[in-house]
Image 1 (cartoon, one colour):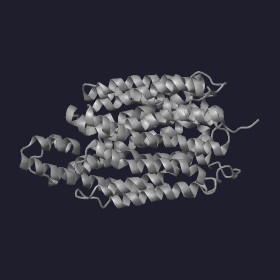
Image 2 (image 1 turned 45 degrees about the horizontal axis):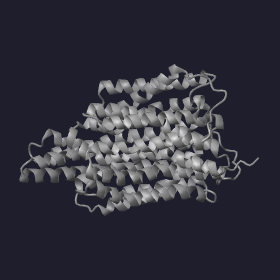
Image 3 (image 1 turned 180 degrees about the vertical axis):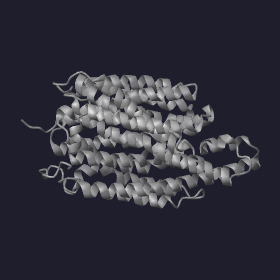
Length: 508
């Protein structure tokens, strides 16, 4: 019997890609809506960071649970439930009346979003059994993220040009409705036939450990070594260790820690995590620079980002085809080094730099990152047997989402700290406290001041933000170079796609 997928499977893949499309669509439209949201709600710096990263925090906290839950109750069933909840949370986010309400709605959106990526990826692994088809399918799946990133700025920019900032969240509602209708028709159900009920204590431990640890990193990065975040971080680490030890004892754990014995699985999780530190926070800095420093409208920014999004879509789709002739470690590693060169270029950025530097650099980033996103994810998912597809898929997304959340929290806080320090030191006397929060708020505050003081504050805020971007870029270069060398050295044994696996696959 042939293991090659047919027309129905490829049609189902198109439906599953709708879910991945909406994950990044929601992220990118929020970045574009941030200046309008800040001017309307006037959130504090802490509230603004929570609005941005609480979605990723909740996704990261619930991914392991949702991946294992999908293995138990059915991945398609969980995907449909998650799509319905995602649509409801999107409506609540659109009509939020204050920062607190938006943060809560975004948290609910994150819990629903935690069902989408692992369910779709696990379903793909059960639909495509041929290794070469699997590689292409995962590449298309990864391309769904970048396609959402393309449509997010364009559609979001058009919406923001005519409607209020909350309208951007409503776009996801009809997309989720389409997924709910088509998924039962084109996507076959799959689950682990021998799965046992979820261990609720493991669920609680994984969630609290993730949230406590990320909270600690976020607070320490912004306010220093204060007692509360330090204690929270230590508690998160302790709970994480206890969670792993509990999984080893359970006959049916929610996370099969034996998967980490596979070198490809463990190394690529680290690689995805390290790159995640850079990817999400870089979009935050780029979009804010183009809007608040270069003075572009959200719609103009959207069109400026299109070349990079298109390059990423092509790269994630073509990389699996190249991997049939070139070993994945070299495609991934040298791609990451290419991204490091782009960030080295960004360290030369100034407030007066033309936007073409960011536009060109972002396009190159999209071109170089494709192999990591598609081939790296495929290496993680293919390391697990079909009945563990939900667990392995959830871990791939844990690395992506946790890396992204940590990036916004740590790297975002690094840039914010540099911005506030430079503006306080070099800005006009008596800088308004609100202007120290973030550059978008500074632009809004400057518009309320008389012409002379307003221009002085605006110029100082833009220069301070540019300094924050260059510090972030320099730190990113170091992280990316380490990640690239790590991947090339550790995974050089992995053969081209479709070739027999070499024997060195288990880490000592």
